[in-house]
Image (cartoon, rainbow, N blue to C red; front, side, top):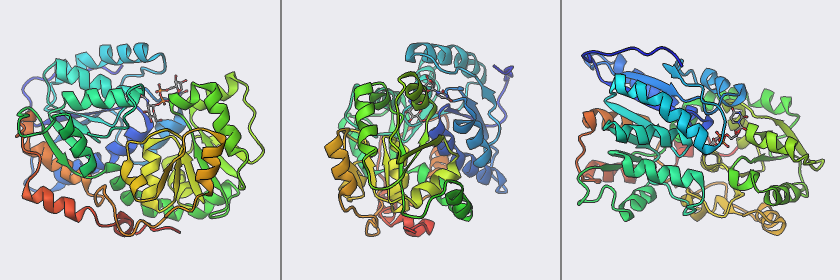
Length: 413
Ligand code: UD1
């Protein structure tokens, strides 16, 4: 762990973003950019935004490479917690974050999504009475057995500012009593999805690499499926994991399979052989992932973020889970929840699915990060009103139903 600074009187607001896993590096990038934009405007007070990387992910392909590609500043703290059981990993995070929060007393602790790093940041912020903001608040899959569902529920309940990516997420929070008129502790606001911001900001760069990326993997546009698998519910249940791979092995096209380190370990330990059409490759960077999604015939995944990215890119998605925290993608016909059997997966892949969602996007317009910075500034120190909807919000919600594919210039290829 890096040496800590002891802070005396704070000259300017300090915000600490706690990240640790691959999707969080993508989510924090637009926030970094929005803070920089704020700081660069004349007359604005300077926000000191620090990144605290727990070190939950540490392999180059899932950590360093993303920092480089997304132009993220070096983390102020890198705690190097590494792998372990949930208990060990969480304990290390708590022990290493606590002294930092105690000495810094951030004006905002910002946590992202649903990982163990999110849980650790949220628990400590609450325990030390620091204002906590949760980006991607209100998502629910309804699967209480999943670590992600447990983590996000705890983070939401401990947060003072709940930054929801959609109206559906706001409704979920209200159902739990969060951000309702009676809740004077929290504010809930629909800001849209920061992953959309990241995609809009990086689309051009990714596009410029499209041809070379596809050539590198020997793929033709629409001539392959893209597969990702890493959720514990799939990888840690060998029967289920094998059934998914068996089903994917019978598909009619090559399947490119960027393998997450967790999944790689299990493939090796369990000595699982892959069918000939499945092409495993090491986990790829963010730009390659966008290109590979955009040009796939369909995306097959158990990732939360990839379900949305495929949707933004206008590519049909088959989700290898029983439920999703992104029901809007299913309602719009872009995402099919296939579960994990041979029949259900083959059926879902064969199903004609909509790629163009008719100009509807429930997740905002790619300006979520600027909205988040505004919210954090206006609620400095976590002073939150209970109202979750204002006329401006309603106008924004209406605007956010415009297509993001249009906003991003990223319709199907
Ligand atoms: C974590 C998140 C998940 C998120 C995913 C994105 C939790 C509970 N899960 O899952 O919500 O979608 O990140 O990738 O926080 N490993 C490596 N190298 C690494 C990282 C992990 O080898 O750089 C291996 C280790 O064997 C480790 C295992 O992956 O034990 C699991 O890693 P962990 O961080 O617990 O969860 P993920 O499966 O990556």
